[in-house]
Each structure stands twice: as structure tokens, then as C-alpha cells.
Image (cartoon, rainbow, N blue to C red; front, side):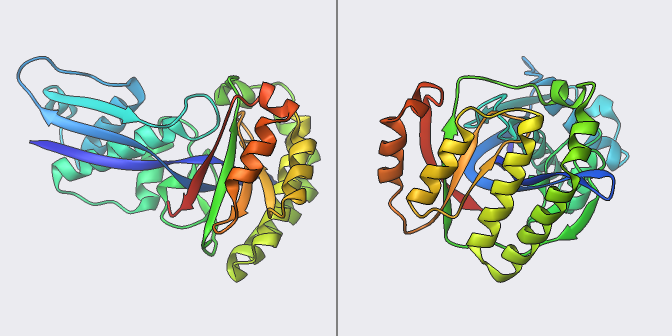
Length: 285
């Protein structure tokens, strides 16, 4: 018998930075997915990715079931999510595996409990929660739950470049650069909070754009200012980035013609760096 778990990707974060001397972020989910499949077998066992395997073991530990009982379980991951781009591919693999394991054991955990397991493996993302939040990626603590967002999509600009999130966090001046952005990040989180509460996409867009520009002192995104200008030109509501990744998102109303802006971007110099430009819907986590 097979057991399945599914978890979505993100296109970076709305906002990420230092708040009250701790690092917080607020992600959003898109309709690209990682699917984990578990199956008991006495023949060849597929171990699967090491982080996902560890996630399965942590679920067994959580319910006081011996890890030894996982030795005959095959784990397979199928993912639509680009790796190393800041789209939460690793978080999605881990989250999908935890969900598949819970299904196999006929157990349940809350999104907060799943996040607490995931963060034992690596810094994680707020995607494992079913609503937007201000979330500590290092501890999985939720500072505040936020409102929802309706009828939106994102044009994703994806380069060939990849970025190791762990490497970014170990930069010698990472924390001091983050501290330099402290005031603008507080403003960004405040705007995001108000925007999500009121479903005011313009406020959300301003929060994202401020946070993305502030992050330029940590990791520069080629053509970011030009992309913001194009977003404004087409009446989109803002631009967000993967703060520890390489993708950029142009946030749009659902009814807007994404094909026009995609063609404009592809006809510009920007497409020489961002080789893949495509649209995803923004969904619940």
C-alpha cells in the first residue's frame, strides 16, 4: 500500500529580515508541488533524499515508534520545484515526507508541530502552516498570524543561477547587514500585516518591494530595479524576491494579462539572465 504527502513551493518571500532582534520571514505558496510516496517493501528499498529520510524518522520518534521500523519503507520524491532558487524545494520535500509518514501511521500533527519537526533538519519556511504568518525560520516560532490573499498570481523570473541558503546564512557579515535593514523591514512587515488584513494588494506590493530592495546589501538581484519599473508600467502591485535565493516574482491581480508582461520581459535584456519566465497562481499553504 502506498501513502502520499504533498507540499507546495514558494516564490521566495513577501518580507524577510530582522524584527525584535530575531530573523523572521513571511512566505507565500504557489501551485508547484513536491509529492512524497512511502511504501513498505521487503525487496529493494529506496532511501530517498537524506533530509526527507530524516523527516520520516523524526515522525516515528515523535510518536515513540522505533526508527528501526522505517528500515523496510521506500521513500520516493517527485518534485516540480526548481532546486537552489529560493523556492522552498527542500522545505517542500521535508513537509511532503512528514505528511506521507503521518498518513502511513494514521496520525495527525498541526502545521506548527510539522514546522517544529522540519526545523530540526534545517532552517525552514512558513509554507508548512496553512495561513500566512510572521515566522522564525530558525526556531519555527510564529510571531503573528496574518490575513489571507485572494485572486492573485505571480510572474516568476528564474535564472540559471543557484544559491545555497546555508552559505548565505554563514556569511561573516550576514547578521550585521540584516541589522542595517531593521527599520525598513519593520515597516515592510507592518505594511504586509495591514495589506493582508484588508486584502489590499497595493500595500502588500509595497511591503515586498521595500524588503526586496533592502536585501540588495546581502545578495544583489540582477535587474531588480528595472523589473520593479516594468511592474509599475504594467500596473502590477509589486515585486518580491527570494531573499536567500535567485528568483524574482512580479505580483499581479488574477484577471491581469500575464502574457503581455512575460513577452515584454522576454523581449528585453532581462531575459538574458532570467532564462525562464512563467506564471504561477498564489495558493494557500
